Length: 110
Image (tube, rainbow, N blue to C red; front, top):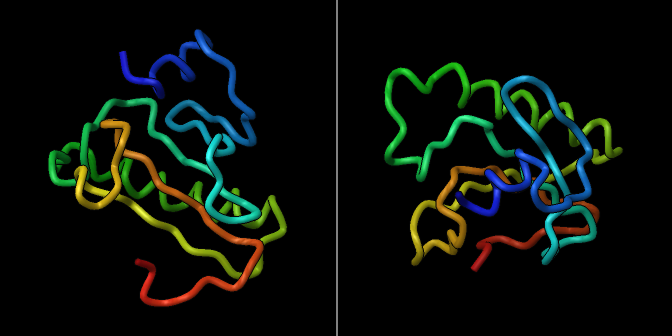
C-alpha cells in the first residue's frame, strides 16, 4: 500500500480538508507554501503517464476538486501541480495534485 492508500483507509492520520466518493484532500506534511494541500484520487493511478482513457472522469474530477478546495480555503490565486516521475519530484507513486498558495509564487518554479 502506498502512503496515500493508508491515509484513504485511515491507517495513518492526515489533516483532511475535503473528501467525497472519488477523492480525498489533505494538508501536505512538508508544505512548500503557506497553503499546500494534496488532492488524491481514491483510485490508484501510479503516475499521470500511466493513466488511460478509463481514468478521464476521475482526472477531471480531481481538477474540479482542486478548484473547490482552493475556494474553500480562501485562495484567490494558487498553483496546481502534478509531478510525474522521480526527476520531477514525485515521491509517492499514487497520482496526486498539489494545491499551492498563500504567497506569491515565482516562475519558473525550479
